View 1 (cartoon, rainbow, N blue to C red):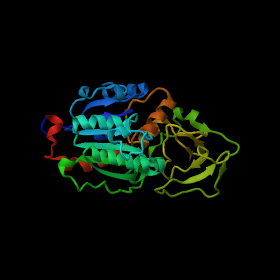
View 2: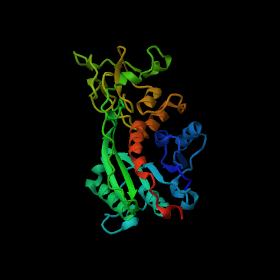
View 3: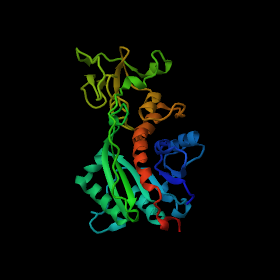
View 4: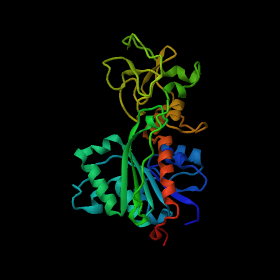
Length: 328
């Protein structure tokens, strides 16, 4: 390992949420991968290098040695109960690919992210099997459910984060960062009134029902103020004085993917640039030219400020600690 340089790989990289979060002098991405060609296109346009494709088709010897393995892997069921199958329990899942790489390279840290529902998936069996497999692979696992809205992000976005250290490092004292609970709201990330890009996002409905009294003060929570249709998912209206609902790659209803907000007297969805800001991606980030692809990409991404704060808690614990097998 190059002295003073922390190297990481970016699996299931999407458009580069982990990469933006970890961007810092002395931190180097040495490999990235994503199966989605649109994600690889945008990643390449922003970082100047195209990720590899399907990680299941990449041999472990093709992946450079690294200190940290990063990845927001999907929630998938296991084919076996997890009581006795060991590594084979994960066969056919993307966790299997993580374990395959980790067994060969033995990175000091696995830094993983998943959706909130992962905790209760298959009556908790998915989580239990995951923890067992990571433990058998030689890692001390720390995990926590964090809401991005408590870490300076104007969006309710609950995700499970796993920080797993090689047992040989003897790290027992890791703690996830404490919430900052700073005041943030959707109105902070909006494009300027009159921006021509907003025209196609305006929603005009005759069945709009708004509360008589609308919020005038900012609050650190989502503020639902009305509905259209039957008021189901994707049919609810929110105030920009509060937090955004969770950006989603999928979903139905007229407000699908971003939610609907009462902004400057009009009901509208959010623009992809506003979604970029909500996820913590920097100004100047190149977006896909198709809005629906942008919504999918940001809906699938990690909240950059949260990942950055977690990594800042990881980094001091790695100082002077190595796992020789990873570089032998």
